[in-house]
Length: 107
Image (cartoon, rainbow, N blue to C red; front, side, top):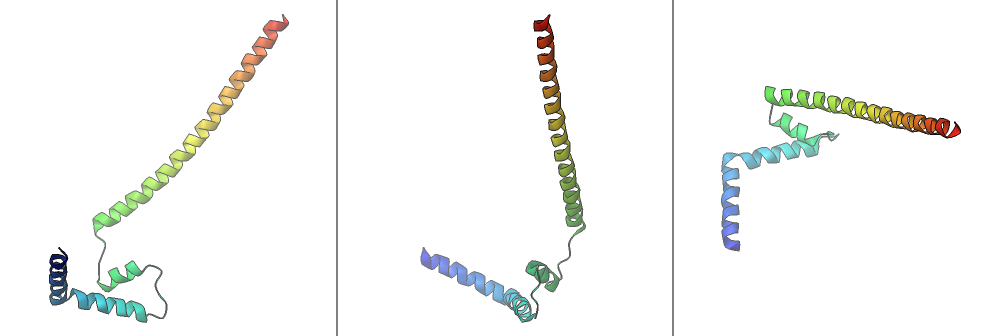
C-alpha cells in the first residue's frame, strides 16, 4: 500500500517537474520571499505573478455578493425595528387591558 502511494507520488512529482509547474512555483515563492515588504494578500501576489485575471463571472459574483450582504444588513435592521414595534404594541395592549380592567372593577 505504501509503495503504491510512493510510486504515485513520484509519478505526480515527475509530471509537475516535466510540465514546469515546480519551477514556476519555486520562482514565485522565491520572489515572494525576496520582497522587502511582504504583501498583505500573498494569494493576490501569486495570482498576479501567474497573471491570473478574474473573469467577468467572478466580478459579477463579487458584486452580487456585496449587494446581497447589504440587503441582508438592511433586512436585519427592518426585523429589529419590527420586533421593537411589536413589543411596544404588546406593552400598549397590556397597559390598555389593565386600564379597562381597572375601570370595570371601579364601577
